[in-house]
Length: 359
Ligand code: SF4
Ligand code: SF4
Image (cartoon, rainbow, N blue to C red; front, side, top):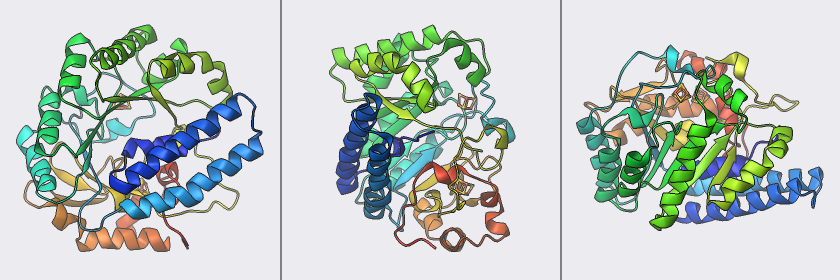
């Protein structure tokens, strides 16, 4: 299975110079995918193109972007509740909870706003963020504090009715990622663990795309599919239909979610079983619904908790000894009990190595 690394990287929506670079990479990557799908280039040329993107340009962008003073990306867990029951999801391993409080989210946003650079806010960890009744208020607050902040919301799409679409566009959300998994209706129900009609979700997406077009909105729609090359080809007519409506696609595959869902992993390890440093400790801090801060967005048991946003600043947490220790263990590949959870995890392989000259 070939992973579309670069469009996946687009989720980060890199800011500044890195942002411009990744937009270019996204275009090149999509071009490679289309040329390969139309058999204009063979698989060797396709692999070479992707290899150049991930081994050179991705690293350059990541080096330009990561910041040891404050995280480039903050994941805010808007809600831990969910209306789906996806079997690959480790939400059931977490402590049960509802939604993040507005004032807690506000304190994190205010700190990021006080700095002289923008931050990317990804508004999820576990759960369906649109179940938080204040999701629109939180997004609007981020954008009102600093228009250069970027906001990305990942949703299963079920709640994208007319009212929520209007609220979403009013909030000035930059990017909505819809986890659709597949265009196969029967397979869809298996992947989400519910008897929900895929047609209903497709209709919601089409309504969203139509509203974006009619309102000339800048919100981008990324549809995330989990399909191998054969399935991509079989569903190419649907992919094209949505591309024509303005959506961008990301082709992902399931990982083991920090070791919690081993049986779902599709990560194809290299022959050498090579391991590189996970991108999380350099690029993202995740604030859960309780305010606990972890270095990793799939840390279901908060094994990598590095602080608490209820009484600590994110900038202090980001520079503390535990964060430095985690980074060091990832750079050397020698994991102590501090990084025990990382040993059995393969989620790190979801992004290419961001360093030149890894051990
Ligand atoms: S993957 Fe998302 S939609 Fe599915 S159960 Fe987990 S939180 Fe809910
Ligand atoms: S290696 Fe896995 S558990 Fe460790 S930080 Fe990365 S994604 Fe999280």
